Each structure stands twice: as structure tokens, then as C-alpha cells.
Amino acid sequence: AKSVTKSVSKQIKLNDLFVALLSSALEKQYQELKTISDASNLPYECPSYVNVVVPVHLTGSILPGQTIGNKIGAFVTSIPFNACQEKRLNSLPRLRKIAKTLSQGKRTPAPQISWFITALISKLGLEFI
Image (cartoon, rainbow, N blue to C red; front, side, top):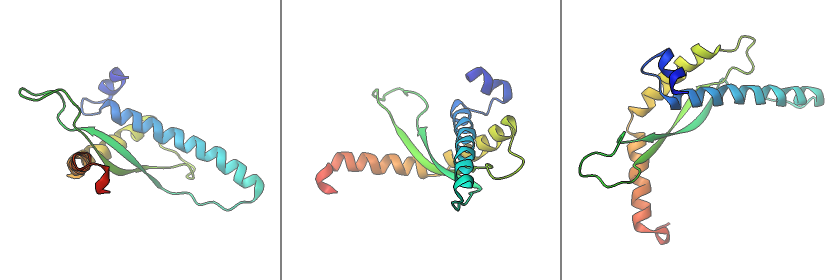
């Protein structure tokens, strides 16, 4: 899978490929549900985006002086959802669009904030909640 991402662009990460595959799978699932809905005359709405939670490894690797452990944050982002459009995104344009969206999300403070809140709650214990 890493060779696929590197053959497209050095900026595209394995996580980007995973989310692009998830997006495509969700569209296919939606098409199946739409077929069932059409047969039973049930109303449905088709979104143009779906929200996903994306994990982010905040340090990239263990740095000198750090203990072994995970410093993982997360952020919520919208990914394209073209299940209801006649022309769906092909694989490469989908991958590039998602890679750009995820890259922007990783540069926001959201992953750091989510890690900090999780670390704070774990130190305070569940009694606090």
C-alpha cells in the first residue's frame, strides 16, 4: 500500500489511501441502500460530504528523551461523498482531494487539543466525569 501512495505523490500518506478507500466503500454501500430504498419508496437524502474522525500520530516517532508511548490525537473532517452524482470521482482524483483535506486538518490545532483533553481526563480519572 505504501508503494501505491508513493507512486502517486510523496506527500500522500497511507492514511490518505485508507480514507479514500473508505470513502469509495461508503459510496458503494449507499448505492446498495438507495436501491432498497427506491424499491420500497422510502425517502432518502444524499449528502455531498460525510464526516470522519482521523487519527494523527503527533510526534512521528520516538524522539530522544521521550518514553515509549503513543501520542495520538484526532480531528473530524469532511470527505467527498459522490454517491448520488451521476459522475463519481475516479480513484486518483479522490485520493488527491482527500490527501489535501487531511493534510489541512493535520495542520490545525484539533489533533493536539484532542490529545490534551484525553490525557487530562485520563489523569483526573473517570470520577471527574
